[in-house]
Image (cartoon, rainbow over all chains, first blue to last red; front, side):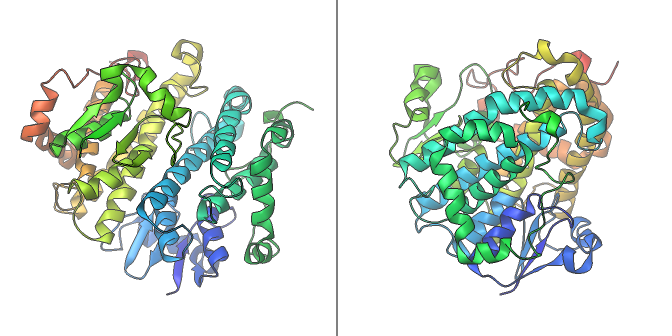
Length: 236
Length: 236
């Protein structure tokens, strides 16, 4: 089956978590908006697909299925691309971890958009400074300490004791945070040895390494979720 | 099987979405923290359970499984309590809708806590006023219009064309929004006839009606997610 991924062009965004799973599995897929423009998503958002109406990208077309919401897409792909260990308990555990990653991703987004997604960062800078400070001082240590603990409780190298899409998502999370908050992450990293090692291992997986070196991997930028605004990072 | 629900005492919060599913199905469950205090959750949050480490309540113990994250719990209960129509496509669609409800719930929380969950509302009132205005003017119409459309595309009465946990969650969402933003919801309600009818139908389901009339249903309050601060609602 050739999957169709629908996500905004020009940014990694939430679509990147899906892209990494497809790339790691060597799945055939078409990145529809990059091929045909963002407008190619509109019919689906306007309800053209008979069964499911996505609220927002990313969404994935898999045969007759249309699946929206990053964690739901990964739950599906995890099973179909063997990116999650066998068994109900592991599948549920993976989903729970992915949802917790998604919660942090939303908090990272809101660190530069604490007032309104529909306004520019420029229009909410003082509020962003306050929210980003809280993210760096309280939320990042709490979430990343949690994920470090999850690795420690498993085999020390994989969130589920074996490779899964959750490891790919943790790699992406770390990559994004390193880009957005280099000083804060330099401060936190000594407490996160397993996460740091996992990110290196994922980046070295042959298909992921090839993907990261390809033009398909867009650079992070200040239109995406992980944005580098030096004034929102720890001071020098 | 007797399920064990773990959630903070004193508020409905995210635990209420799970509680409504358990109540509607007539499932046997123990609301552990209400029986034994919030401290009864600590061993799990500290890692006592061998398989899964929850990041935060709610979590559900179902036999040997420990499941955290509201949408993951409902995905599991939906299948085991027959609260979702049969078939992979319907299960995935339900999960996607629940995740979209969860996104709005997070936005509602952040309307009174736009800067930091760890600070009091009092410490972020000006920011909350800006964020709540955006929620009322842009986000609620967008999300609720979406859910109205989902009902319209199904049978007009159920999100999935048949009763499911998603309908229970939409009821809870409407109940919470009516409590928190009565003026804004009075303004929006004429555009949401199907959602309004769904909420009435759910409230009239025998087990839900019995639950809502019981002391197990806590009133909404200003410690929960849906808070009524008149200054965050539409003006009179």
